[in-house]
Image (cartoon, rainbow, N blue to C red; front, side, top):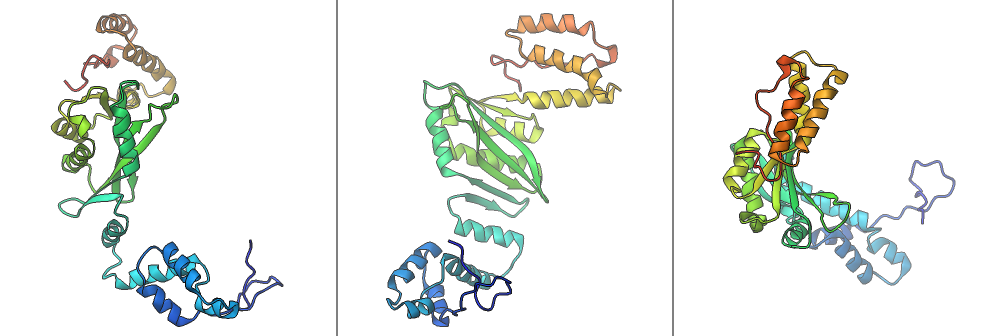
Length: 297
């Protein structure tokens, strides 16, 4: 149902409704009540006058009005409107998401969705489902902060959708910050201490890899294929093979190496392919990426 603008509105619509001001005493009553705006609104509507004329004045207009009154009340209590203080305020209000907050020596805000973490723990222990891939990456930069997140694969579905469940905002990309991340992850998912069907995939960033080794020494970890290819393109450009068409041969070769089913097949492919490579582009070392070989050894 669309509401018509009231009599004091600047709207040019011909149909208007008379403006009826809410009783100021009701505002004070809303401020004194505890609970969610929806709960307060329903209670006041139920307890309001039965007379329709008095109900317009002595009952809240809608839930948005109640929400705005409570929001302005919280703002008036704040000692600061600084972004850091706002995050602390958010942590107090949204207790089920932000669980760790640190200001010094580097800002770190850790949070997670409890329902998704519970789901991850449940499917990771099931023997009838495929192996679980946990992806950790620092992809986004939000203003002055980075965002690191953990994504898991929902293996109950054939499509295996990727679902982000754990997040961390941090000021700098240091191992100290990632230590916080993996320490909190270890608390949330104790099954990772002795994993049977779980492994990590990262971008091979040193800070992440070292922190991962520290907190999950028994979990296998592999480099993300996309980052392997992007590193390849960057290295090719550094030796004057910068055109995309020139790079495709090398990229295709690397994909073939990655898909090798054994180390012997990998070695044979590497020998045959390297003959066609430019001499300056021959890699000093190409890691063999296969489920039976640990990437970080």
